[in-house]
Image 1 (spheres, rainbow, N blue to C red):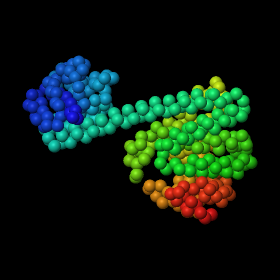
Image 2 (image 1 turned 90 degrees about the vertical axis):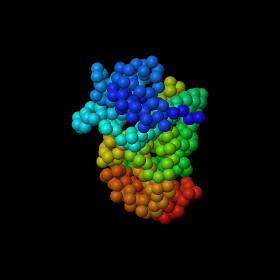
Image 3 (image 1 turned 30 degrees about the vertical axis):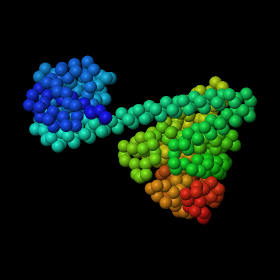
Image 4 (image 1 turned 30 degrees about the horizontal axis):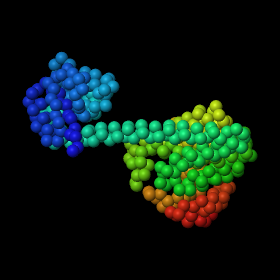
Length: 387
């Protein structure tokens, strides 16, 4: 049998307590308290409360002070607080929200409003706790998998050849994590790593890139590119696999995959540092963290602009967006290759580094060939079938 939620009602007026108990008792266990000290003592002694309805105007200790104490305590700060008040000044509500309250219910109370607000905030509180537990579990999973990967890789190193094998094993393991969580990955990571290499090779002799792109670095970029979305391993399934447009709140969580990916890679790099040359993961961390930055500074997670964005991330941005355009998604059909190239060119100097876009124009045929060679069964092949 599902346990009923507990609502702590705090009001110095006995008739208000009786009304609220009558309004809520059919669905919740209601515990009344006639003043703030009584409510705080009840909670301090282990009393249960999933939500608190708190009168503002009470003798001795008013509701604002009770809320401040609740939100300053580790044991009670997560309990949603809703003020019951006849006050209607904006500054009173501003103070209440600044103290951590979730909502205000104005007196005289409306039973339907009280029931709706209580139901909504209890549901939100449950969802928040579930998400926190999910994130904690995912962080633990990432830490455990990273430790496993680091240990497996450490065993491989005794020579240069084994160092190369260790790099490949680390990236393969991380990629397996990403592919296991993302139902749209398919051959996306294989296409994008080839796009990155083609672009880097084209720019190898360019004056702006000559000092940052040599054969060794290009090979490291090729190995690292598949890790650009590895942070999605920490994105909740309800968001990552959602069949439709994300809400603003979900989009905030989705964007955190850049930080999650960078942190996991840096953790692996630190763990490997004593056993092998782990510098190859530097580019993987740059790509994971910065591939959604934009040349004009309007991207995320930091809003970097121009040369402040690492070259590796700028290359990945072009590769990633092109492949997204030509690939089928739940929210759009695949664009033909020619249209995708035109759309990329339109973002020259805003989303993308202008010189990298110019390089893309010169290797567009190679991009189309890569898309065909690593096409998804769902339809990427026909989306890049013409040049």
